Image (tube, rainbow, N blue to C red; front, side, top):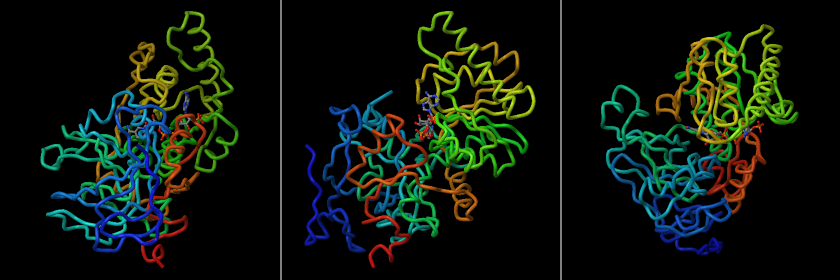
Length: 419
Ligand SMILES: NC(=O)c1ccc[n+]([C@@H]2O[C@H](COP(=O)([O-])OP(=O)(O)OC[C@H]3O[C@@H](n4cnc5c(N)ncnc54)[C@H](OP(=O)(O)O)[C@@H]3O)[C@@H](O)[C@H]2O)c1
């Protein structure tokens, strides 16, 4: 059952800190307010996310307990609540799931063997968890570790809670110029887009990159990364307003997908529907030629929409083009005409989040002010389920976050927060 958060100002700091109050340094409360998903209530976010008071976990060797100041909202919270395509509780095998794979906060307590971080450090978190022991973790790429997991999705203690449990390798320095809520908003999508474009697709200066969902979380960062790399991003959006936003973030050209009815792939298409879709794709391709100024497709397609757009992505990529994909919002079963792939020697590249080194490199660009981390919408802790409803129904744009420990917006550090 959902319980109302405690709001009293007289509280036992060793038991539960009411939302909006700050814990006492050095004292770890026994319980915490958390938004919890349980198997029996999988469904839309307002049903699946319920407020509960949970035991605060103890950091084990190599782990850190972090007091969450703000948490970022991501699509994986939607998937976790829906229990689709799998129930994440079957992955980590705990009876509860606290979602949330982005956060800013304060290192509260560290486990044995943690030497690079100490209580009081102000951090942002990256969401890759791996064993740290295998050869993939020690020389190749932790993303190849057999035990690689996404924290807050495939692990039980995510950021929609007063405290969260992470591996110490997930900690990154919080950029001082950012407020807690902005610092919590960018990691998952920005670091994913960074690996996709910088390391997996290895975008080169001068290349053309088609970015689907360019005003969304991933897309907004993809545009900026392309510009930093000297490439030319073309934004695909669904409204004029989102188009303006994409231009501000660096899009060289903008295409409104709503101008191309019939472009989306549908299951069980009739031959006539397939022909109509291909006609729409050719018109869409001409809009790309106009932006490029030549009859050629993009060198790279930045994919995460999946079923509805993937056949168009494969069809329109240039000869030897790369389609780099990390998600499938519109469906996982991808149907496309493979002749477009082999005849023109295109490549499909899978990509998934990023390793600690890539996150560190990307985060340093935020420290240096080279990547803009604007927050589109901020929610209160109480509105975390609603924020996921907005995401599920595509009523949002850009990046979203929610206040957790920070009593209100605008604070940059612990000193300011408790003053
Ligand atoms: N593997 C990973 O590590 C990883 C990391 C991050 C995200 N992801 C996945 O990537 C996907 C996108 O994440 P996000 O955070 O960027 O989500 P987002 O903020 O919701 O942005 C997605 C954008 O896609 C566009 N879109 C939605 N449905 C579409 C459709 N049917 N056809 C064309 N465009 C469509 C929308 O823009 P318009 O309506 O303006 O076109 C939307 O803004 C999610 O499925 C997420 O789970 C995976």
